[in-house]
Image 1 (tube, rainbow, N blue to C red):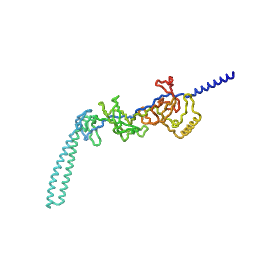
Image 2 (spheres, one colour):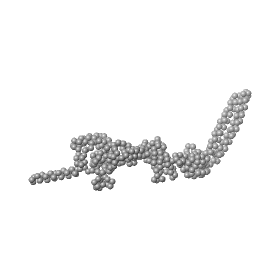
Image 3 (spheres, helix red, strand yellow):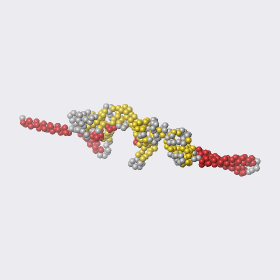
Image 4 (tube, rainbow, N blue to C red):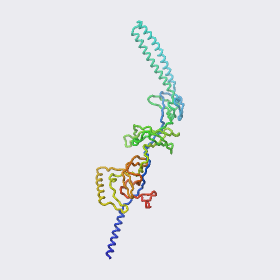
Length: 426
């Protein structure tokens, strides 16, 4: 009897030790946050910043040099097409016109005499009173006189044009947005280099010129709708549309590691507030794609795992008893891992984009195909279905800890797990 009591005690002790070891070795559940997969609308946008400018802006400069004797307009004033804007000193150009008229009239009279002489010479030659060479000389004098008159006419026209250019007219109707010279200053008129006196813009038509990075510009198309935010007019958004996309790039820091390549994109404003001024700064969001009723998941819920970790068969687990698969299954799986690990020594392992689906108390890595993206959502083209529960956090769990078959415990909104205990901070 005593022997059986000792044996019983030994069995109890051994059993307790075994149970204790099992409990100690039991896998600790990973705290996660989850959400249900659902249909939503996803908008892909490209952000950029730039400057507001009139669609039509004309820089006005003088074609002839001279002092500005009159300035008829002020900055900010609206002018009509053809309105007189400024007057340059025209004394010199009036004198040049008078000189050109005098030369023209003189050569015109001279040509008249030569023409009469030619008529007489032809009659004399016909009557054989002069030689052919004498007639040829008179004909040559007439042609020279004709050419001289044409030159004098050209000089006269140029003198008239120069005089007319001393009066500066508005080429378009619009607002004087910049006045760079004042009355009394010299306008350095030149055909080859503009000396801008003022700028006029049509403020009824405005656009935003932005710089879009080379990685984003391929997504932008003519006609894309745009949301415009103006720094000077906060808490208000205006509508626009893409009208131009440059084909030539502008590169900052070329040849350095900080090199940035951008393309100019022009956005026409469909709404123009009265407070708007040329030169104001603006930020735009170009809507490049919009997909409705598609599966969308939070961006942070998508992570990457090596291909062998995704394709490896999950170790079957009875969540109630804690039993694992038999040794044969484990041996088969581990052999695959070893083979792949050897492969990793010579070639980089392919990484797959995955989401973790919650199945009972475990997770499963599912390869997914991503479509477009918004600021906070990815479109999922394949791999997930509406109603699937996926892991959205924590970052540490998604980036490192989670693997197929891992035990998880879902956090509630108040920071407690499903048992009502405050979750541990990892």
